[in-house]
Amino acid sequence: MRFLVLLTALLLPWQGLAQEYPGRPIKLLIPWAPGGSTDSLGRILSVKLSEQLGQTVIIENKPGATGTIGHAIVARAPADGYTLLFASNSTFSIASPVEVA
Picture 1: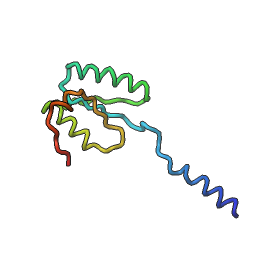
Picture 2: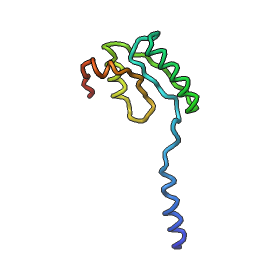
Picture 3: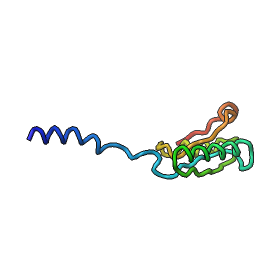
């Protein structure tokens, strides 16, 4: 009986392991208009990222307000690693912060 209790105690932590990442497509949000240099670099990165992770990477462009609209969308997204932001430092250094509720 003690052996069964010990075995159960040792095997229970395995039940709590999360599924492997990534288990579904990843969204790469680019806060600039399609066709620009940031968009081109983001698309090149998404191909390599898709190859490395073995999962589809979906590009979504959300231009406007010097990139802060895209930043706010990613900030509001669930913190699960499936929504990524491709940003440049100009957005962080020039644009005024957007309050995220």
